[in-house]
Image (cartoon, rainbow, N blue to C red):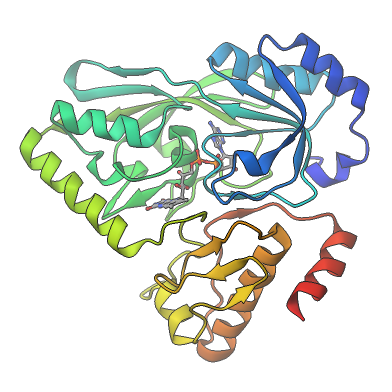
Length: 325
Ligand SMILES: Cc1cc2nc3c(=O)[nH]c(=O)nc-3n(C[C@H](O)[C@H](O)[C@H](O)COP(=O)(O)OP(=O)(O)OC[C@H]3O[C@@H](n4cnc5c(N)ncnc54)[C@H](O)[C@@H]3O)c2cc1C
């Protein structure tokens, strides 16, 4: 498979303009990604379109394939660090939002549905099984790909199946087992993935509204108390087996350490905050410093939970050595 960077040089402006003209939704050339990412970082996407229906989502990807232009689909952009140099090709923001609460506690949702809204609606209806997600940023598609979870719940516990689009543009209905779920991971996770989740079906269960609301309040309060506000990507690193990434980073004396406009939160050491003037290079530099320091002190190599899209080689090496000094 050809990677994003390998084709970057070959993306033709003419092809991008042709895609923009053919798309059945407004598309923006040179669209700054920092406007859309939760961390507020990322340079321009060559072309960006918002897909509000499955048809537009599928057509956008199909057009990119037809014109030989690289493409990526994102949901809430809550878990992504794009490079300062931006992304070449077409970026599709998935805002397909259909949600159907069906019989027997079956929930069918478009992949662009906002998890927080779906989870809150489930609680209000007295449907149990998704309460853990009342504060989970992002879309259903991102949550499925990442096997997102919190407070002992995770997507793998409730997913029945999904509609997925393959590399040739064919739609398949796949069961839970197809995803190969592991801790915060599925076989679709990673920048190299070329399959799309179009929609998902969840099996929820009967619950008591008051009980579910009380539980949701506890989870919300716990998030507010433990997670720092501001522009973040959530937990930067996965918890290593039997330990917590935040504990190790704090024990290594790194709380409050900064690189330019990016700082390790003094409240929760596994959160890196963009104070508003940070860069992706600074974020990655700080991330590497955390990995190195924790490894030197405790022999544990922390693995990122977030998806980091690399800067072009030359730019990275120059700016990162500057930022580290
Ligand atoms: C403050 C904060 C708190 C968080 N707390 C938690 C938490 O408690 N638990 C947890 O698990 N995570 C947490 N996260 C991380 C994040 O919320 C989840 O990973 C979320 O599920 C990502 O969804 P998204 O739509 O934003 O994905 P994006 O960031 O848009 O995309 C992530 C990846 O998924 C791919 N993708 C997105 N949609 C699709 C699709 N439809 N088909 C195929 N691939 C797709 C993208 O291409 C990309 O590779 C937190 C993040 C923040 C900022």
